[in-house]
Image (cartoon, rainbow, N blue to C red; front, side, top):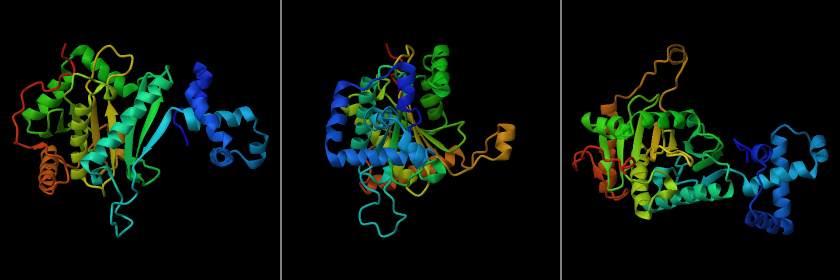
Length: 334
């Protein structure tokens, strides 16, 4: 409802117009009296929440309201909602359904729906250069609602983080192997993998972080095959399950932008929000990690073994149950 980059932004800066198929969907919905009332009520609520008084609301032109309504049908910031609010057979209101409470199949469908939504957004708006995909779980991680949801937000720029990652591969195309998978392997921080993805304990983050890398030659989520997407989803799901549903975390996606020539692998970071940066961190730029990487690995590994024995995650390789060859990420392969 409250877009980070609004449809009004796209219209004013790029003369963005809805696709004909989206216009037909909108018009068909508004032809139904119940649909028209539904949209009217939501549009009025949104404008009131934005600080518009009823007096000004009544004086708003049809053009202003039409722009708000168009955002509901052809906007470029969507929420992907999980089906359940609570886990099955929940007894307490704290038993919320997180990503880790899904079955591997449910998580794959949730992942696939998100990737399909990215593809649709790119087809709908040709001015998009990057789509930010993220999931904030619980309020300490920035979530405004406790119901599980991913967000996909289209941008007309890469953003500083992606720009820095692209600059890294400009200097060293194999950097995500050398400073990611290979370095983690050398320090025994690789803890799970399958044929399509690998999970490691991240180093150098402000929060305890798990990094999951796709091994595929494809570097964008929507370019992955069904098998690659499922394999990647299985590792992400297992990590969520091991982290548990009671601790807040951020899930952040990174991949090669639409218009980038130099490739970065699709990878996801799961950031465990167990510490709050304060004055010391802000004043010094030194961030204290409350969990040692090796301890974090051990905690996750034991939990993964338990979950796999219970049949709650897919049959992935855990800890020392595999041999990892150097440079497992194929993103820079010719």
